[in-house]
Image (tube, rainbow, N blue to C red):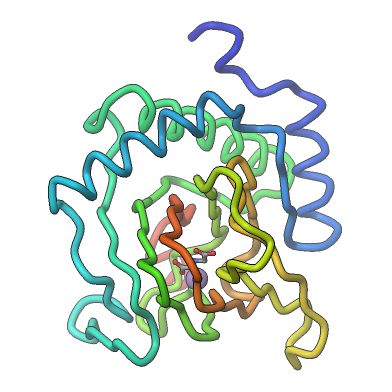
Length: 213
Ligand code: OGA
Ligand code: MN
């Protein structure tokens, strides 16, 4: 690993402190413009080759395509299979995982991630990321790949900051913005996108079965 691949300790400390304090953070320093440009290229190349599929809701037997809930398309990613840009994404987020585990004891074990493309008009209605039949998803990480996202293009992620969904924060899906939040606590939605909207969404998972011990 070269130095440019290592996230500075100051940045990791501030991410961990903010997560401990609020349960969410919007970061713009972990990924550089160049990293994002390469990820966007990789995402678009896969998209143009028709490798995406329409996203579903739920997991396992309960998985279902629900166009009235979400209308994006996704491509699942795997570390070690997908080129340098994708590997860099996994390497960086693994540094975040380790820092979070050291300080917050969340016991995060791995990261499942997909590219997502929201065609013009696509959205994802208000939801929580933790499945009803699987509570492994613990920390959500959404990274946006859209350069110069127009002010009036919509497509914000609306992150509700309390259980009653009164206070919220709208995050523009602008290149390099990374949002982390606790998967079981924060309701969120994607407002209809006025333009094609690209992102990488990941979930840090803790070991399954912990609850049964
Ligand atoms: C998701 C999701 C948010 C976004 O894929 O579960 O909520 O801003 N994505 O893309
Ligand atoms: Mn979500």
